[in-house]
Image (cartoon, rainbow, N blue to C red):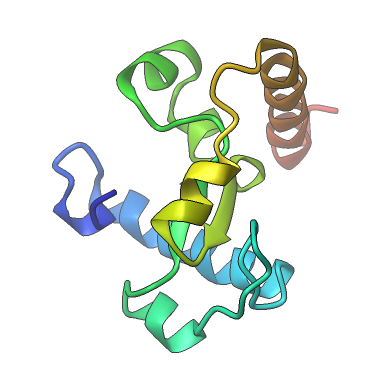
Amino acid sequence: MGDLRESKAVTPAEVEHMEAIRRRLWREQRGRCAHCGGLLNLRRIETGGAAQLAHRLPQDKVMLRKYGKDIIHHPLNLGLVCSDYCNARVSKRNHPEWEQEHVAKIREAIEADRGEI
């Protein structure tokens, strides 16, 4: 997966937002990989190195069209991982029941953030 800054579909504000999420996840995960638990280096995260943002629901055209960026790029759908191997293990592609529950949780979190609950 390429660097967010290389993508033409992502605005500078979205890049900044995703970098803030990256730092937040590093804190929440206590500097550990979401899959294997290996240590992640914060300096390399801040410079766009090593650690990857893994999407539990994949960041592909089908899912983006189905759910939109707010769901796909929500922190509850992301985890920091140390490698492509761990990134692939975090993905929950083809788990429809889990997908429905996961999206419902994200929607609740979005509504709570907006003060709608």
